[in-house]
Length: 77
Image (cartoon, rainbow, N blue to C red; front, side, top):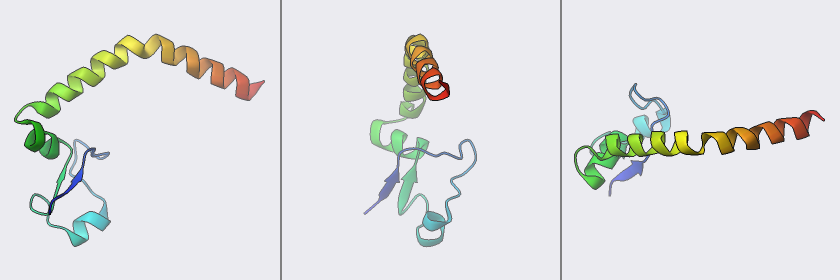
């Protein structure tokens, strides 16, 4: 059974969490980030997801900034 980690917080460097690296063989026992998404969805899936995240992020940025500003103002007041 292959374990998956959908996100590599260390990217673009290799995954560094010792609990996985010590006990599992990367590529055989578990897939991380790009390796997982391209295996699951085919070549280029990871890059497609990144583009989608960036597009959506730009689209909702103004609303997120408003919400963050409100939270900050509430916490400071």
